[in-house]
Image (cartoon, rainbow, N blue to C red; front, side):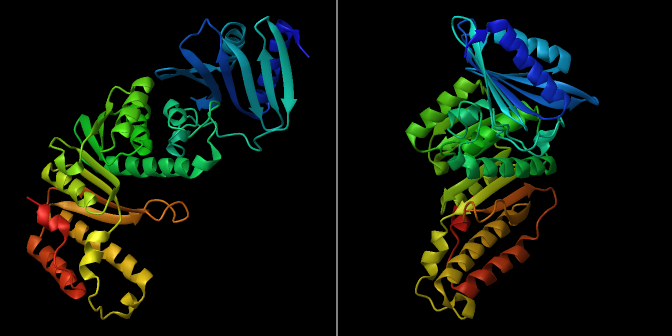
Length: 390
């Protein structure tokens, strides 16, 4: 039932204030902007703790970018009241006891509904919670890429991708700290695809950590390049661009961080070669489709009983392929490590190979002996990366 606008908005703000006071507040979403706000689509509100004082953090989502402001609770409640009077027709309040939705008609009438609570627990009020959750549900690019809906809620079928993005950024942040990088960091993401991780990387490094980065995504499919460039423009990501090109044809040698996630088969080697030739400070790969070595050893008798069974043979030669890659990188003065970067339950393509440039000279003859012994043991004639190193 529609009621007087002023009294309903007052009641809604009082419910909001009470939820903040008693610790049941989860989040607030303002949507359906009025004609007075032609470029503003949503405002998202959460609580944060700043200097031992509770504040309201406002994320303004415009059509081209996001803006954040933090206010003391009293000021924030006044602002919310003002936004409801002038800028938005719908407000969704989530608490741990109930959900409330305020609808305002174009005629100035208002309706307040109360539903069962969506969330059982209130989120952390720590301002640095992005150290644990590096991607916020209301980040604009997530919606444009189809990971979240209009209300900033992760779409169920994209939940694995959302977890993968957060884990990826956690790893990237750690690796960035280990590497010696210039003031302006040039990052090349080879085989960027639809750009899920590329967008997340740029947004996190530039907008959340405040680093001066230039990110270029290399992708062969023109429709994905156009798609990603359009979203980057709409998000106001001026330092992010996408180029249609084959990895092996990429010629920019000024690379500080080289990333190649799931570049198929020898495309991973082409990417590594570009990183090595540019003396990149950091090379990050997630190899897949290890065909080149497996094809060489097909039909050759293997003496180890571990290689009697097909599934073990496949995994063994994946390990051999990536180990030789790591050893070749070590020959070029990189500290290397190989690890699982996301659980098998989300994807089988879960191994990450990382190389960090070091100043100490490598013992190249000893490393080459290790490579040669591995090749001899398994009947491998050559590794593709060996052939393309210049």
